[in-house]
Amino acid sequence: MQITHDLRIGGLQKLILDICSHIDKRIFEISVCCLRDKGELAPQIEKNGIKVYRIPPRPNNKTDYFSFLKLYNLLKGKQIDILHTHNTHPFMDGTVAGKMADIPVIIHTDHARQFPDKRRYMLAERILSHFVDKVVAVSESVKQDLIYYEKINSKKITVIWNGIDPEKFNCKINKKEKKKEFGVENCYPILGFSGRLTKQKGISYLLSAMPKIINEFPKAMLLIAGYGEHKEKLKQEAIQLGINKHVKFLGPRLDIPEILAILNIYVLPSIWEGMPLVILEGMAAKKPIVATKVGGIPEAVIHNHSGLLVPPKDPEALVSTILRILKNSNLAASLAENAYKRFLKYFTIKKMVSRYEQLYLNCYFKKYPSQRSNVQTCQRVNV
Image (tube, rainbow, N blue to C red):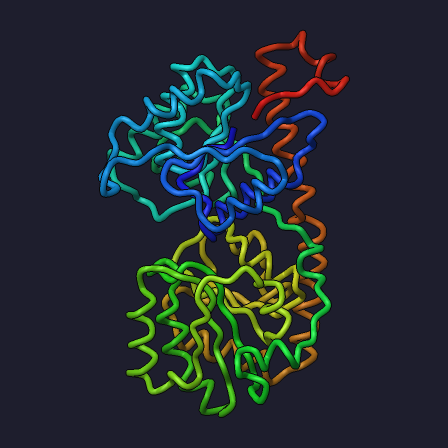
């Protein structure tokens, strides 16, 4: 069973969707539990016959300090073999409930956050790490943060890079019609960002870079896909910068592959990251990428080879780097091709799910070595 906050549109949630979609159903019987809301991705999981549970919230969505008991009541009747938690709240509730329910294997994935985190969270995770079988970091950068800030034993941590399905980004669309849908058919260049509209993503710095880009390319357009608490603030910033006619806020989208197909450059100006799926999406879509040199991004994007990296919080660096690509078509084509090749080599969904499957089974067989033959003959493991 996968334990998550919710299944709204986001990188962590997409990863759970992909695990559910691609895991070997001959061996694993998988389910998901949301501690808050189901969200937009839940129907995509449920249509494949996978059960998605939701822990009932307190009235008015007040903090529920006893949600681990509700989770325990769910788990104790399910005969779960492996519990896989994602990020802090699921880590805490899932590990406590999992131990109470005597679940054999507990695995946790840290998808990254800005360190140092709240001291109580870091202390809680340090303690809980002793009660799980493995902690997965989505990048080497995240692993080093967990070791340095939370003092988690390095032997307990394994790195599994995120992955996505390349087939989703090999989409054949009518680009002219797609541009017409957004009213950008006469625009060039079209820059794009997708993700949560939060401070973490550094979108304000990209907006600040746009006036100089527009000065060089008067028909430039920036498409921003996603939702978050900074949406209205960012809209006001665009107005104050006098670029609101050159920026379109598309809201949450389920057609990201089609949007990527019409972009000239994908930009990720994050202040901090783990291993963002959106950067892998840009690579899979064969787009030249400009991103900040933070977190796990340099593990995916090799500077001057599969993309160009800039310091965070630096609009001038964004301007010069974006213009460098726009003024050199050979460079743009080379970066895009190299990004795609690197994606296929290291970041496909098949590679990621295979590593998670092996981790699940290794931890399970360590507890139950006699079950190895049963699983090899396709007796299912509940995860």
